[in-house]
Amino acid sequence: MWERTSANSVESYPAAIQKNLNWADCRYRGWKPFPQGQEDTNGVQDEDSDVKDVDLEILDWGRLGYNEAFQRQLALVEERINGSAPDRLILVEHPPVVTLGRSGSQKDLCISEAALHQRGVECCAVDRGGQATFHGPGQLVAYPIIKLAEKDLHLYLQTLLEVVAAVLRTYGLKPVLKQDRPGVWVDFGKIASVGIAVRKWVTYHGVALNVNTDLDGFNWIVPCGHRGEKIISLNALLGQSVILAEVKKIFIKKFRKSFGYTATPRSFQRAHTRPDWLIRTTPNAAAIHQMEGLLNHLQLATVCQSAQCPNLGECFNRGTVTFMILGTRCTRNCRFCAVDSGKPQDVDPDEPERIARAAESLKLNYVVITSVARDDLDDGGAEQFSRTIDHVRKRCRQTRVEVLIPDFRGSIRALQKVCNAHPDMLNHNVETVARLYPMVRPEAHYRRSLGILEYAAQQRVSVKSGLMLGLGETHKEIEETLIDLKRAGCRYFTLGQYLAPSQHHLPVVRFVPPEEFSQWAAIAGQMGFAEVAAGPLVRSSYQADKMFAESNG
Image (tube, rainbow, N blue to C red; front, side):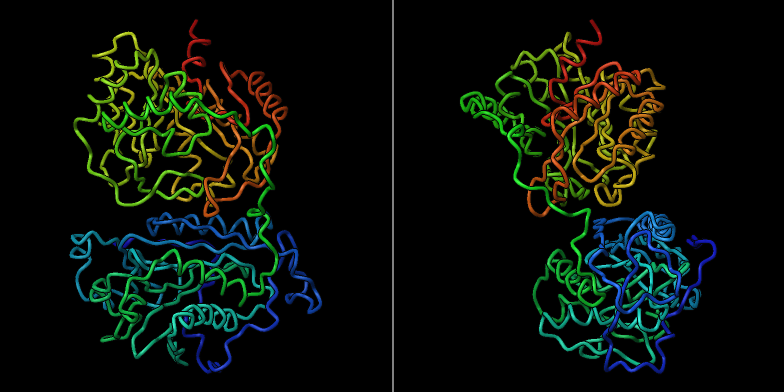
């Protein structure tokens, strides 16, 4: 059965509203979005109003399932309607999915729904305008969540398509917009489709541009109701590989220009030079060299290295490490994290034993084991966590084991597998406050992470979590997060400063002074947390052995 994704009180506008428009002049002159929180009192913003206070948040969700992305869109639409958030532009790739708009039907499919499922293709009926379309990896999908000051959907649609056309022109192509049909064409082939919806004059859904998409998916449908429609991609037109990340940058630039966003987004303003309290003394190079030699010999990775931890020198000098299992490439693309993302390595069945040998060689009394997110595995890597715990305990009977786990996409079966291995501490970081999840952790859920912690606590496992400061969170939001963690059964808590790994990651909004961390440590202690580690350079595994020892005598 087709899964219907919809929202209440939605006005949906098929792209056919383009009819009788003058496609020769598609620029949205005089476009002025509403600033965050400004009420729409006149229907049209005053011509002399200043757009410098308007910001646009760019949310790159990486690769995300269609239904999950749709639910997130609806939540962001509500935030924009009530004025609690600015305009946003979502960029996303979807796993293979066929969607049917309100004008579509089973007649728009060239193969059966069952055959689509056999090919691993999701099927969704949606509340946008239009008929059938296909989304897949390598396709840039853009969902603007913006409040229309000019209540003119024709003009909005024209401008959105002109953004795509402007992107294509940068590659030397000559895009064509057709009067009676939605989308963008180049050389008699369709390269982009569009379908929009609006609720209380806040837009959602959007446009899809084929960059390096596998075009076979379009053979399974009647694209936008036009049988025999030739579908093309940027990659095929240029005869060379096109990097999706580069197209995203160009799209953002053209979108901001076409829609008149001139202010620097508040959420992306960079803090200045790192303050003195974040400068560390030169680490012991000999200790680092010795530790790296052992790790290389055993073919092991650590999160200390992969995540560019500022405490690497100190920890290696103390003879402590946080082992990272399941490879060094993550299936997610969190915008704060230095760990590489991409196609993951095969699971190494000998890895648990090598980690146990390393723990034995280092004479570790406390071992921390973490992993990249492995959404490609049925159990998210839970079995490898369990086996690693068992192997360490067989070789090092007195050694305590802490695990820092991903969310396993909310799988209780996977989480139970880890709990059954009886780690001495189970750590799962919420990382940031709920409001910032779409920007910071686009492929995760705040409530899901709380659920992971709560379930583990119910299994009588000691539970720990951590939070970064400096991403734009407020005092109230930090306090609410602490309350949520405590209610979930979390007894151990770490709090540190976010440091951007590179210019391509989320910038630091604010460097939080040490005394503020001390204040939060005191507040968390008053709330009843058993142990709290808070400071600019504190990380979730930093001196984890001391935190455990101090609360367990």
